[in-house]
Amino acid sequence: MPGSSDPNIMICDQYGGPRLEPVHLPLARALILLDVEMLRRVQKFYQKRTLPADDARKAKAGPLLKDCNDAMRQWKEINSGKRQFSHSYLKNGHFDRIWAEGLRIITEALRRNQPSNNQSQKQSFERILHKCDTLASELMSQMVDVAHQGLLDATVFWSIQARWLRLDEVLNWYYDLCNLDADESEQRVSRVSPTWLVDN
Image (tube, rainbow, N blue to C red; front, side):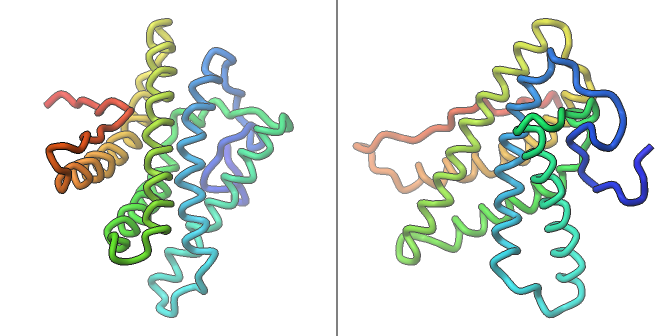
């Protein structure tokens, strides 16, 4: 059972519990690359700012940044071979707050930085979103592979779906916006990753 000093986001096997089965490692590595993109967005957003003056925003920024730093430290230990993925990583919903905040930061940056403003910053966030799109496509390939083996746990499925639906909303908004002002002679842009279909 997690101790009182354990981080809120637990990725590696340092904090007890079984290690992730080898058959699920490619899926975990595909997912963590997307998680890391969200972690970096939140880290950079808050690290380059002094904490807001009002208590409500301070209360939000401090814990978010701590969670990001804890998660990034664990990923570096896994990536270096010092630790392994925890069995619970693929199943828990601990990244929900990080994803919500990371995608909010990306969306607001793209809305704020229209062509008449800071074009270089806008292009930077566009590259980040394109990267997330590509990583999501690779993640889907790993999910399909695991599912074909009959090894895609329902809890894992729901955990990934929660992230994917958030990304869907931003990707669909972004590509619709890109194509809105496109001339007939211009090639329409489309996403790389599939849209997650949810049965009604």
